[in-house]
Length: 437
Ligand code: ATP
Ligand code: MG
Image 1 (cartoon, rainbow, N blue to C red):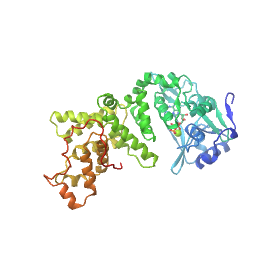
Image 2: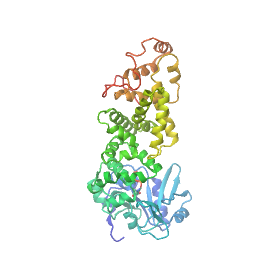
Image 3: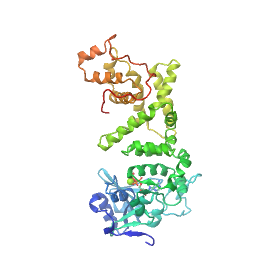
Image 4: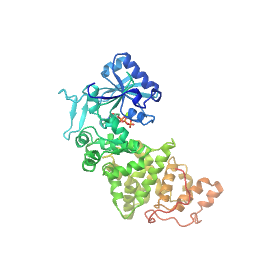
C-alpha cells in the first residue's frame, strides 16, 4: 500500500462495538479465507461521526465468484456494478470487489457518448478502488486486519474539516455520473458539511446533464433525498444549485412565479412535517410527498379546465394524467404511487361537497384520511378554506346526530360559505385548528 495515510486504531474513533455483528462476520470470514476485507463508504464516514450507519458496505480483493464460494447465504446482483449480497435475515451486507481504473478493452467498462459510465466491472486494487469513488470522505477504508483506517485521497482531513469534495476533477466526475450532483447535496445536508467551492461551482452549469439519467434511477435518488430527514433543506439546496427544475420541471415553473408564494409556503410546510415525522421514527408515505410536490401544477391546470367548462372532479382527473405523464419523463414515479396521488388530488374537490349523504360516503373512502390531511395543509398555508378543513375536523369527531345536522341541506354547515375551488386567499393564513398529519 504505497500512498495511503494510515490512521492506527488509536488515531480514530471507530470501535467494533458500533459495527453490526453481521458485517463483522462477513469481514472475519473473508479474512479467514485469506482475502483482504474492509468496510468502506458511508458506514466508515458515519462511524467517524459517531453515527449509526444505515448499512455496511464491505470491499475485498475476492472476485464475485470467490465471494459466493465463501458465503452460503450470498447472491450476486447488478449488471452496472456486479456485487454480492450476503443475507442475514433482514440485514444485507453488500460485498464488492475492488474496482480498477483502467479499461481492459474487453467491454467491461462502457461509456456513453456523453462520458457517462454505463457499465463498470473492471477489478483492481484498493488504491484504484479509492480513486473511482465519488467523495473523499466516502473513500475511507476500515481494515479488519489491524483496525486501522486507510486514506488514499485526503478523506480524513476533509472529514475533520467538514468538507465534501469530489475525488479528482469535479467537472469530469460530474460528467461521468451527473447523479453525483444530487449525492453532493444529500451528503452535505445530512452531514452538515460544506460542498467545496470547486465542486459547488460547476453544478448549476452542469445541472442539465441530469436529463440523460434514466428516470428510474432518478426516482431512487429522489426518494433518498426526500426521506433523508432533511428534505426541506435538501429542497432549498437543490433549488439553489438549479437541480430541482431538472427533477420537477413543472413544480419549478410554478415556484418561479414570484407573485404567488403559496406553492413555496405549502411545500415548505409539507417537507417540514415530513422531516419531523422521520425524526420521530414515524412512517412517511411517498405518495403524499409527491402529491404535494406536483399539487400546484395540477391545481393550475385543473382550474384552467374548469374555466373551460369541465366539472371539477373530471378536470382534476385530466390534469392529474397530463401532469403525471410529463413528470415521469424525468422522475419515474411508479404506478403504485401515482395511483394514490391521483386519489388524493381528485378527492380535493370532492371534499368541498358537504351536504347530504356525500360526506358519509367520503369518510369511508380508503384515502379519506390522506386527502383530509392534504386539505388541512392547504388550508394552513392559505390556499384552501380553513373553515372547510375545520368542518371536516368537526365532522370526524361528531356523533351520528350531529353529523346529520351538519350535512342538512340548507343548513349553515360552514361558519362562512365555502369558496368554489379555484378561488383562494392571498398569502398564508393563521390556522384555526392544528391537525396532526
Ligand atoms: P448512504 O448509504 O448513507 O446513503 P453511502 O456513501 O454509503 O451513503 P451508497 O450509495 O451506499 O452511499 O454508496 C456506497 C459507496 O459507493 C459510496 O460511499 C461511494 O464510495 C461509492 N459510490 C456510490 N455511488 C457512487 C457514484 N455514483 N460514483 C462514485 N462512487 C460511488
Ligand atoms: Mg451505503
